[in-house]
Length: 345
Image 1: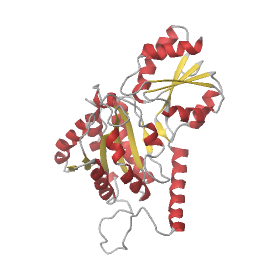
Image 2 (image 1 turned 30 degrees about the vertical axis):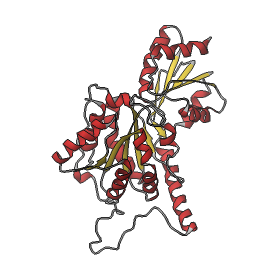
Image 3 (image 1 turned 180 degrees about the horizontal axis):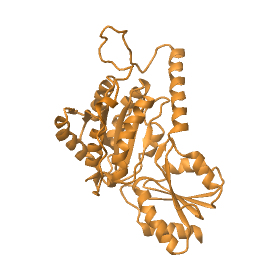
Image 4 (image 1 turned 90 degrees about the vertical axis):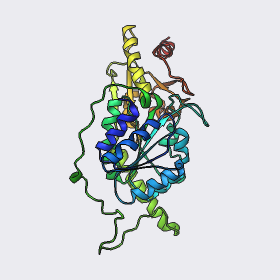
C-alpha cells in the first residue's frame, strides 16, 4: 500500500468515523482515500474550504467524544495552529497526521523533517503540548494509529503522527491491524452528546479569571508530566558495543540502519538510537547512552531541529555532531557514512 492510504485504512480500523480535511500534497491521497472509505463504513467525510476551517470542524466534532482525525502537510499544519491551541486548552482528544514537505514558506512537495520544532515545541500560542509519534516504516505507521487514538483519549490530548513525504508516498507491504470493536469504546464522561436529563457538561479552553485560567494550565502540566513519565518510546539498533551512536527518526532512521551495517563492515562500530516519541523525547535513555560513547551524530532532514533535544539529553557527556539536508533533499547512505568517517578521523 501507499503510506497515506495505509495510515487512512488503519485509522478507520481503529474506530475513526469522522474525518475533516483539505487536500495538500504530499498527503492528498489520504484525504481522497477517506472520501471513498468513510461512506462505506457509515462514517462522515467532509472536505473543508481551508485548513483553518478543518481544525475548527475537528474542534466541534471532538467535543462529542468521538474518534476524529485530520491530515495535512506542512503549510496546512501551520494554518491549523490557532485551532490546535484552542483544542489543547479544551482538553480534546484528536489525531493529526502531518506529512512533512520541504520549506520554509510554500517550499516544495519533497520529503523533509523541518516541522520538528512546530510539532514538539508547540506551533500555536500558550503553554500546551501534543504527543508526537514518528514511525519509520509503513507497517509501524499503520500499527501506530490505534495507539494514537488510545493515547489521545487516555490523556485527553492531541496526538500528531509525524511522517515525511517519502513515508507518505512510498509503497511497501503492510499487515493492516485488526478492527476495533465498537463495544470496546465507551462514551467519555465529558462528551457533549445532549443533556438527556443529566447535568449539563461544558467544554472550554479559557476562563476570563486569570487565577482560574492558571488552574487550568496547572492541570494541563500535570497531565503532561504523566505522559513524560509513562509514554516515552524509542528503538535501539546495535548500540550495545557502539563507539558512535547516530540519532535519527522517521525515514532518516531507516537510511541510517543501512549505514550502520555499511560502517560495521568497514570496522566502525556504529549504532542507531531512534526516538519514536518525539514528544515526550527520550532524554533519560539518551543521557545514559551518552555516558558510554564518545561521539553522537544527529542526522536529520532539517538543519538541526532535533539536534537541540539531543544536546539537552547529552549535556556534554559526549561530543555531539550533526549532519543534515533540507528542502526535500534526502541524505544518502554514502553521505552519512562519510560524515561518520570524518568523526572517526
